[in-house]
Image (tube, rainbow, N blue to C red; front, side, top):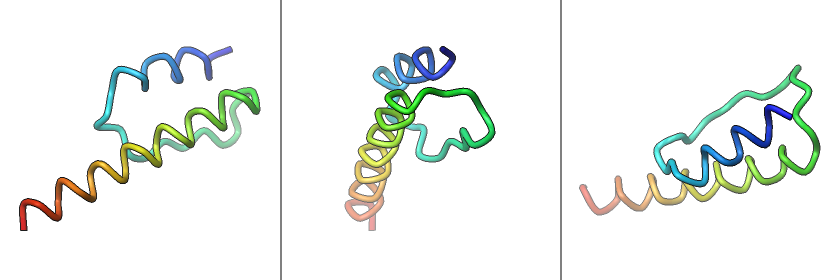
Amino acid sequence: DGGKVLEEGMSHNSSLVECDIRLTDVGQDSEYCIAQALRTNQSQAARKNQTQI
């Protein structure tokens, strides 16, 4: 499952804030974990941008 590989990679990467996995065979569990990681990364990026202002 390519979603598992992406999910694993995202656990070590906080810079990815968008990822379109539509029309892929990513499993539902992986899709959920990837979405959670993206939300975390987006929140961290927003906080970082606010502190730079």
